[in-house]
Image (cartoon, rainbow, N blue to C red):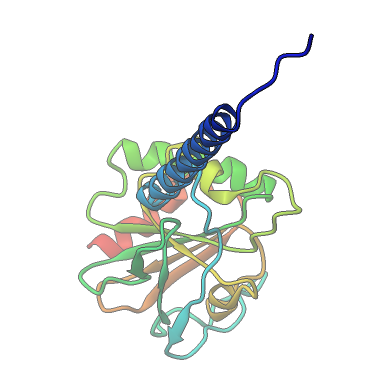
Length: 215
């Protein structure tokens, strides 16, 4: 004979199911909030940071494109300033204005960048950039290209310098006359460009350019 359930028994089961459902929703909300909080804490190079590009406000005259050979017309020009964000969403300035700066433009999918950035990381760790503010511009970001996202790439490489995100149009890279990746730009304490070089540049050469702006 089939067992009959009383209305009170059915209501009790319904309340239990509702309680379990509410608890599961609460757990899911807590997980989402926890993950989101971690993303904000990641800052530079955070492997799980959700923001990979950001709007940039650029002031000053754009630099001419870096020529393949010959004298660089940008040398002696005032470097453009930019206000933007890092991976964690914190507001940052490209140039701090309190000393010399080396700006590195890198694309996560670029094999030359993937070899140059670790070399610069080792150089920085050895103290080679002491006294120089080193900032990487994460540019040409494309989620459909290899080695995405750039935040995870820089995190794996151990990048300890500052980071500023370029926008989807690469506006900051264009303002600095980028014609190839990576691009390294040396800016003295007065904010003037002293050297621009592109490609896989030996560290001893970068050290020489750094010495010029450190003096």
